[in-house]
Length: 111
Length: 111
Image (cartoon, rainbow over all chains, first blue to last red):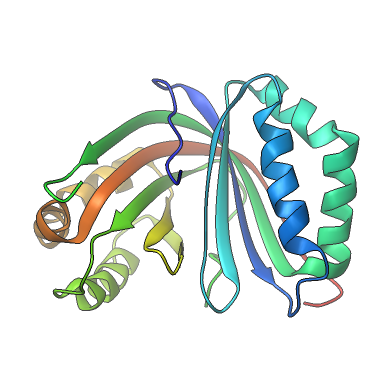
């Protein structure tokens, strides 16, 4: 499942852009665990993620409120994973929190 | 250049998530052209893009205002490219327009 099934706006998006360092070192398992953990948080609406072959990736997680984002940020297991990310998994990252104002989706003739 | 060098918030993000259909059919050349064209638009701040091997991708374009997003949407060459996208290049897509409220970036010890 690639696409997040989000409700009508407004809601919030956490846009995480990152460049992976070489080697896995537990990254893939933790990333999968974080998706499961986030999905169980109150206010979680969905997540979308893509990563190039050269290690550049974008993950967008959707939440219904700023409060839900704060709860996710403060979850101890997520905080520990972020620390490992800074120390081991990413060369650089950018995190942006945004309020989704409007949205539009379409299946095409190929969909 | 993967990361967009955006200013301090607030600014706006156009989050485009898409699943490509099989075959190129002019997609790669047009995608590159659209990046060049967007970069020349007033109010354009940057773009980040990643796509998985299975054809799921996320592109986030940043603009300084809603007005700049409207100008980009209304550019005739961009409108023509979107039409081809619906007809030929994408199985499904989701477009979200969001206001970036806060941002944080870091080089890590690997950066």
